[in-house]
Length: 275
Image (cartoon, rainbow, N blue to C red):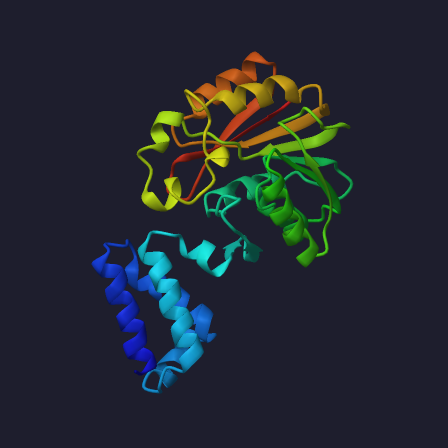
């Protein structure tokens, strides 16, 4: 079997299982296993597909056809141009969240104290440190498994981060110039209707925003004032229909200049304000 025939076989298997973006996902898995870019593939497509990588590719295709996201299969996702290790203990970083990082980057300075609540893979805080001039930070999560993933990513990029296992602010100490969070914000009922890749494989702890999806926003907004320095900022990623309620809650707790930013699709994605 040639490289081209092997790739086409993978595509056909995924198409038969009605996997969305079957061709693209098969290519991602193929390029990861064979360490080929598009140019190299076109030069080598008629060559025989070598044994062990071919077996690995087909094994990966079997996992993908069961709707496991390819990021969990290969163990990484690119975010802000940086490769992050991921497994099923953390949400897969998404491009929408890059908007949150970009907004924080506009105000962050090197000596600021930054707290990343519900850090997951650590992609937000590590990206802030990689893309800007931030020298250190604090990241927390309730999941010990998620913290292990975040620590691994921080070690890869040699970033100085204090990790805290905490249920929101319960075990947090100190005060911060910026608190940033991408908390669980999908209502419990809505999770049932998510695509199979999300509801069957991504951690529900990181998705479930309780009954109405606002549980974590309310608690973070109310408690954050005790952990923010004077003039400190609170940044959130939000669901596309949640801006109005989150803004109202922040203003009720006397946050000023509360602002909403849209993502590349024109949907509300980030809300922030300061005390």
